[in-house]
Amino acid sequence: MSSSLPDEAVLSRMSHEELWRLFPIILSGSREEWAELYRRERDLLAEAVDRARISHIGSTAVPGLDAKPTIDILMEVSPDSFVFKTPPLLRKCGYMETHRDEERMGLVMVKGYTAEGFRGQAFHLHVRPWRDWDELYFRDYLAAHPKEAQKYAELKRSLKEKFEFNRDAYTEGKTKIITAMTRRAREEMPGRYVP
Image (cartoon, rainbow, N blue to C red; front, side, top):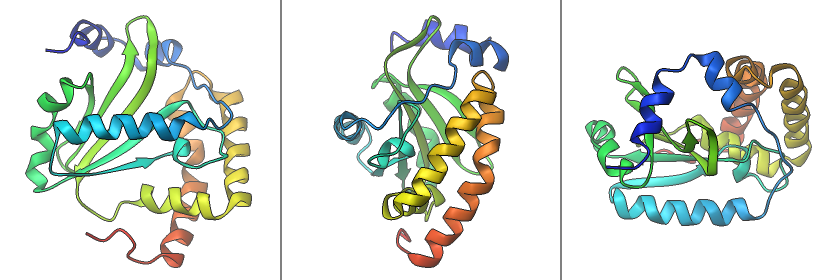
């Protein structure tokens, strides 16, 4: 088993407030190495789970966009039931499970989180059935519309100042703009990711 299990046990006992203090919202300017870090992690994940479509999502996937220096990855698997068979395979890659949604068939697994704080590169892995997910459209919209991406970056900077130690409030503060931009993206690129 992964050496992260002791960290996983400690982190699972912490309150949201304790976790937010340990892992505050950090924003950085865009970094060229994010694309390469994603590619290396994608290759590692593809070796572990061979029936998957793996995509770089989130702000680190958009060149020039300020972001939390966490690489977000969407792993889509088929059949749907395979979602919940992936954790043992992904633990071998250093991931630990942080959220499971049986109703929506989704998992969130993370890497780079320890009981002492961040260690190395942080990754968020979203494991879901193969579908037409909003995150793919939102990423493409930001990449195609630099002025809109800058509006989003300005909002994130403002929210970081208010909610550095409250991840839920930071995320909630972005919801309205993400929803609007994703709707516009789907209008511009209908069906782009339909399996």
